Image (cartoon, rainbow, N blue to C red; front, side):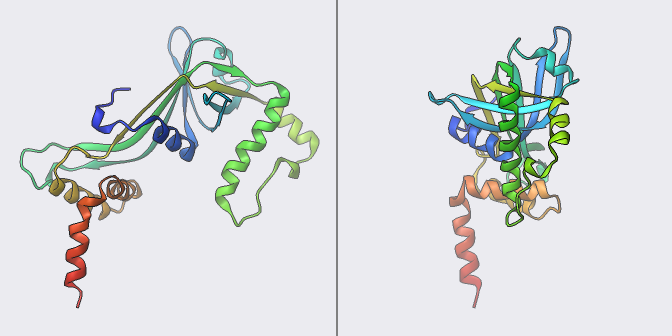
Length: 221
């Protein structure tokens, strides 16, 4: 991943972003072309701190045959938004695109049958937790025969993450006036991605908006 230093998050921030998203594209090389699939995942950590990404694919997915070979890439994208050059205060600007992305790279192995059961429970628990106070769904709600059939139709996979790369391109390098102007324009868009990027920009450089907040407070009778 090409990442200018100003946009590069630290390792902990990149891993936290990946875990929070929990959805990415796993990509491998079959010797002639890339093979990829979009899938949910979660992270665990070995005793030495090495991250491991766990996910699964359909048994007939071409990726299955590539486990145990060359390293795979797991690409995780967040919100993104187009920025018009007209939104800057400074002249001679160009359009750009703001986004968050993290790439995890490492070898992948297939899980055993015993490991697969625990993986499925952990994966569903992660995302069911986001739906609280809904009572979480568990595999225990399925009949044993149906659950067994579903397990036979998939292959669990584990990536040992050897490289963590991230790029959080949020216009950090722009002047305060340009930064604030673009954040304001994005916040005014209907697109949810644009609004999320605007929110992230305020988190990255909150000092830029202190004056703006103070002026607003003074204007209120």
